[in-house]
Length: 323
Ligand code: SAM
Ligand code: SF4
Image 1 (tube, rainbow, N blue to C red):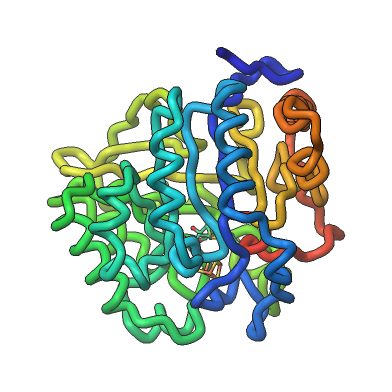
Image 2 (spheres, rainbow, N blue to C red):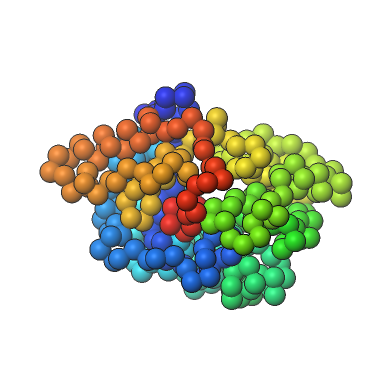
């Protein structure tokens, strides 16, 4: 079944957040003390998350990304993934993580049915990594990436949020990671979602990132794959992996956006920046079995044409929306 929204976009991708909790406090994502946590009872149960996933697939969703907060901190995740992987019609089940707990969980995740991993990694220097994440241990993430390869995962995707004066001096080092291994390194424009101090000087456009890499390495454009995200992809001539540029700010990709999101609190959003979304809890608890599917259909059809991230928006942590 194909699901087309009001703007003619085919919607086939669900980002499903399983928790708002996180074992890091990245400076661009959360304030130092974190954000108010959802009460346990306000978080969707795995049963409810499963029903959201199943109904979404029945509507035409083919790819689900598990995200958070940090998905690996929620107890029982592996069992939940086993169930998701069994949904007929789901073609791709992938997961985004900060990688800290990968070492201990990666074999179970692979067995349960995760097909690919995205790892958020913003620095290859231990001190810078610790400073950005407010205390994270780079070694654990690198060990987690190695463990993923050993467990049989394809080369991971690495997401780097580029911030001027903080880690932009490492853009070429990240690009070089793709030379000999099949990593897909994605450079993401920093979004001032929480307006932390000094944010306005941090933005580096995708064009500048590309230009810097292009000055050092010859870049060949790649054609987007089916269900590919908003990344514009390139290969350094002769490299094993690929690099990609994601430009939510300078060149919004709303025209080709194929996704919806469901937060851990059960709010469905057609757009990352579209207010608080539609609360699915009522539909989940309705005696009318068809109501949940109908509500999800409304979210998809009602997806806004483009995002409206404005300077006066209320700050919101990505950990709460499932970035
Ligand atoms: N905790 C997991 C992780 O870090 O991969 C999954 C959730 S995290 C919210 C998902 C992605 O959102 C990460 O790749 C992170 O870098 C990105 N993100 C969070 N805040 C962002 C911001 N202000 N600008 C750009 N990307 C951001
Ligand atoms: Fe946690 Fe991911 Fe946000 Fe960092 S980006 S604080 S790892 S949710």
